[in-house]
Image 1 (cartoon, chains in turn brown, purple):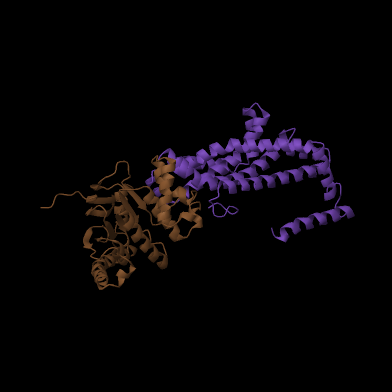
Image 2 (tube, chains in turn cyan, green; image 1 turned 30 degrees about the horizontal axis):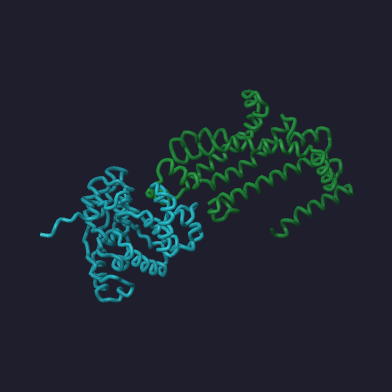
Length: 267
Length: 252
């Protein structure tokens, strides 16, 4: 028998009920997942299925109603998670560099150290010349790079990404996907990545966890048996196409269910 | 600046000059602009405009200093806590529309110093304006930005100093800009009725003894002061808030 290894992230029977009228809204229903150290896990599901909620539970931004999330801490003092938000969520009154060092600053990392780290991360996302710019001077793709640098500068045990590329135009998104592959290969972080795009999930992920329509349950986990390092050309391979079809067949049902329910509430 | 912005006041002044010189306007009440300019210069040289102007400027400064800190505190509290907002809203709705000059008798009764009564009366409307804009500033803060800031460790006083305050600063400035205008209006009015010095007093006294030219000179000084205050605040805003997309425009 192989030795027992504890996973990097252990999500066990997590349920979330949003309080509201009556019994409340069940957003997540007993979701269990294990994520290995250094793994890139993609969460996919129809909109409103609770993938962002699950990510926020991992980040400690939303409390779970039951169940637990355990994150294995390997380095003392490092934050457990750092999140990249869909709408970049940068502080408009801080320069790019000051946004990037915001996490370490609040953790009390000495100024010289945090700025050194911040500059390093800015270089990694290719934004060194824009260190002194303000967010409103940047394009959408650049803002999202800052968001990524901010998360990396906090040097978390696990990197959480909430549809970070969803708000970008198609061309910028493609460039950013390549960037993400490169950065991930360089740093080897454990990543939980929420997306609604199967293509994106296959391009980036080691495994894809598919959630059902609300209430979100874990429907199926697909291993992505595509080689690394991976580039955009992988999308042309027959394996890629076969996986897209396979996952879409499962996802389609859930999307249709979501649409039917929306129809129902509208009536 | 477009040429029309310069041409239109010039045209008005030239028309006025001609009308007063030819007797179309009665020069007793509408002295020629050049005459007013002469008197203006004389009042500057003999030190009376600098004196009265200085007094009014100091009063405006005290008014703003008195109104802003409590207004920002109350505005932040109203923006953050719904309970505070619901508690204070009806009170504000009743007091705010009262022309604040009307509080002068009551405040004079409560405060011994006539000077203090002046300044406190002037501070009432700016207080409400800054409190309201600060509250709006908190309410318009992007929820995801707040979520992200908290996620990256800004809690408690850090959230306050590093997020809430800078995030509402453009709105506080908008309130200040409006408040400065109102402070000047109210102070001049109060100076007219109850002060011996200040531009309002100078204007009122000049009118009382029918020194119409000096009344106009005081009027010009008040207008210049108002424009100068707005301009100065604009500069300060551009300096302090380089991150606001359009510094000249409305707060975003």
